[in-house]
Image (cartoon, rainbow, N blue to C red):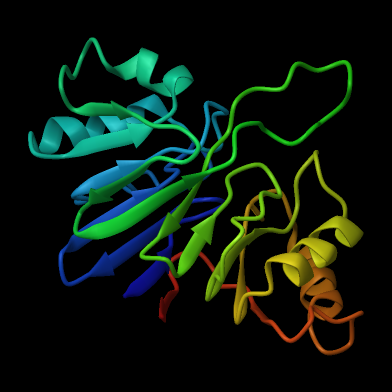
Length: 214
């Protein structure tokens, strides 16, 4: 498959069966969801779920469907009956020709005084894992981990340990839209050979618009 970074936490996956887009949010490109055959949304926060981006894709193609958790589905189902599928931890399904497994239930803790929303991660074709806003370990081998490198809810030591625990062949940076160029350089250095090490995983940061063959 081919993975294209669409800004912040959004990626587009293209394979023989079609095109899948995960988490087209407010920090992703405006047309991030357009042209997708299926859409996956990990949770309701606006940097992952932008209703206008999804509506544009759903209006453009009546065959497009969305798979997500109840908090997001409730905001779309009435307008697009039969096209919004509610899924949760342990579910499996096929979307745009890709086999999908759902892992996780809750968003990471931002602060104990802030309520935790629900969050699910998607494992695509048993190879690419997008955890959303949580450090969920899928409990099975993963070739490519989409790594949320920077967020109000994480710190550097946690993401290093997370990569080591998941043990992917590669970790590709997502959730990096709040970083400056100086910040990207610091993370790139510390997650690369000069840093503490990722247990054998290779780290790379695709810039928005970049594509990677997996």
